[in-house]
Length: 405
Image (cartoon, rainbow, N blue to C red):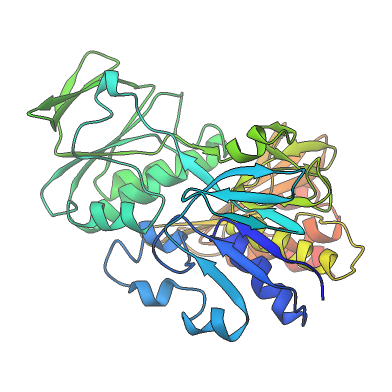
């Protein structure tokens, strides 16, 4: 039996690694370490169905608590790793105890960026949404009629806006860039999603940053925006991106960039240490990327599990993402980095459409808005390396099924 595997981080990637190893009949001892006080659970529904009260926490957990003992997976909760000693192949916990490993997996995830205290980021009523504690705190504040400011027009901010409007809050979303979704989607997708939000009563203010938050007795009361205007607000959600949790890796001398640098097998610069999920900077199509998605966390972790039991297949990420906002399901296949052209295609039914991304004439990604056929077609084309001619995509009369024949 192989020596102990220690998994630092009890999120999607960490649990997927442990579960896949057990599914592959691997019997090595596994210890999983999590900073929260609850067993591993799904995070995406936290800011949606869980916050809306439509899903209980029990439904979010990956497995019942009994699964861990039944599968010989030791889980340590409410604790942190302070230090990795690579020469001794051990970790030191916050209570001073030491745990030895043969293999170490870093699935430490990422942390939301916060606002500095100098502009009011420490005021009561200012939130980020990353874990159960964040969602529980925010749930008590999300009451109809209250005024919410959302800082950041990426997917986190837009999803929060949709939930807040559903609950009856007045929502103002500010984005300092030229438009919402500036970093992650084409103008066509942004235009569609902006229209959806405005139709539901959210106020979207682009090219507008935050100058400072204004408090009274330590509680958020208003916000001064970059254009000089001041708006009264009761609470704020900060959605300005995340940073990879790579401090442990950096402190012990592993190679880090924008995340923990790994090879195609998720090995770090120390072959006994792996990293996967949001914290990992992996090679993909000749460039280093971080993929902040459930799909990547699970697929990369399961690839590592297969490698640990003797597999030889490198991890080849096939990115896909999704975002639910109001009655709109935005599904994304591929990774649009470096696109130089887009094609907007109307869907077969009202309210459906898709945006197809090209780089040097080749399809690299698809955004599908309430258009399952476009998503499935685009995803299959990307997975099989086939192309779709722009003229075909631009023709609404062209049947996408022909591309898969």
